[in-house]
Length: 135
Image (tube, rainbow, N blue to C red; front, side):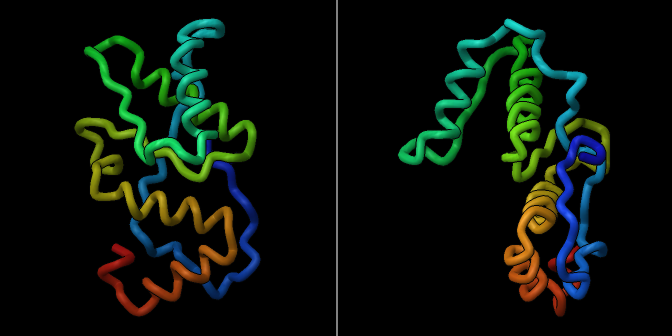
């Protein structure tokens, strides 16, 4: 794991995606996870939702400022990274140019490409001739 991101060695260097837009510091931060034994009910609920193939595709976690939403998100990402089942994570931060919403989808795409050679090749086939799709 590098920078809280699980890395898998590339099997095909010809599919180089290094020039794609990527926010290197936007991943979850394991120092921001929930304290052990706290928020277990909601963490279990989210984990169950993740495993439920019939669940809705989006889970909305809402609440007032300071209620622990970010800690919950960091904890879930950490749990699944530890299990080597985290495809990607992206944490927004006001005022940090590298973590703006414009980089969300390119980050997800690059992260998934690092875990699956077939996805990497498919992504490369889409973006290699279109600089606008990479930047």
